[in-house]
Length: 277
Image (cartoon, rainbow, N blue to C red; front, top):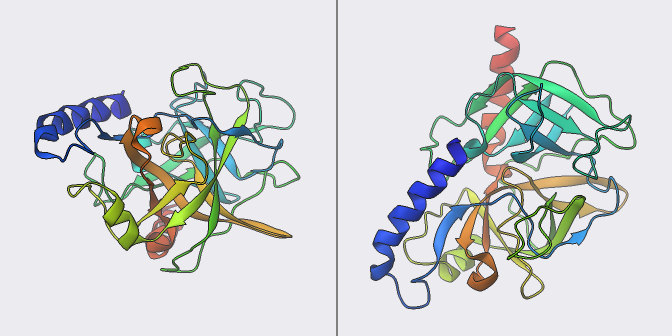
């Protein structure tokens, strides 16, 4: 599987370089999110109606990554989640991960693009856009997240959502949607906090957990980091990308793709799709 292979490659490279790191970072490895929120709390059912579960095949949906609905036809996720987008499955309206029922909506992906500058490893440009073959029907359980203003830089409290494992040493995923409250970390402070050789770019955004032993870096790859607004839709500020493992020990900011840096790219891909089809 592409994500696993890439993560192993990163681990090998990082291990080879470990001797060059300071003692503080010697045992930490930059890695893609493992698919779980560590020590999160159960989210209120359908409190994140924009989140989707992604799988490689419609016929047998086996969750691999999260994604975010941005309108009735489009989903954003991480580039490292995507191998062959056409034929992938997206399920919206989930709370309990295995319960596909009358509240959920399953769609097939018929078009997708990974950012052209993404190199296939831990680093910047970790974004992909997916088109569903049939539009989502918006209701109480399925809604889009808002896109931010172009190049907007957010600050303050944010929320991460994903299907998580209850403890860092328990490898079984929790059945229900988990959430973690985090504090956004600006780029200069994130650069200062991470190892000197961290593959960080201004097009990333970081967050730090507000509670010790609670980790955001293991949120569902491709899933949403949002700023929530009272009486208004949540705003998608980040896409879960990578962090240093082991997360519980690292106590370092988690790294996301900053969505506001890619507004022009998102619009260009949507325009190209409609020109083709």
